Length: 72
Image (cartoon, rainbow, N blue to C red; front, side):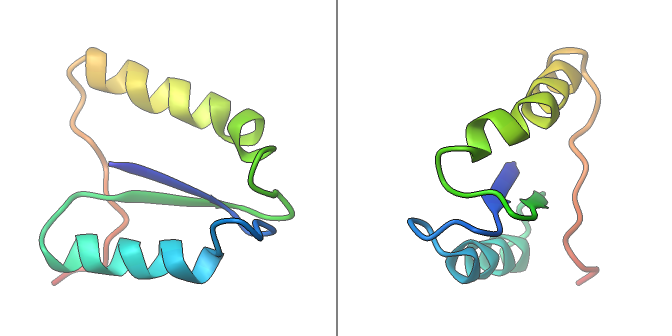
């Protein structure tokens, strides 16, 4: 799962997304959690687009999803 969060988002608070990341990692989900400094809610779409396209392209190419979850 790719999880993206703008650090300046006031609609979906960064702390809530970080908590979701921790919960997903705790249940064994592979999560690639990326944050974007100074980026708000709507601008996140443009800011994250290169990462999203690369991530999706890698899945279609059969590459395994990466995870930045801490070791359990």
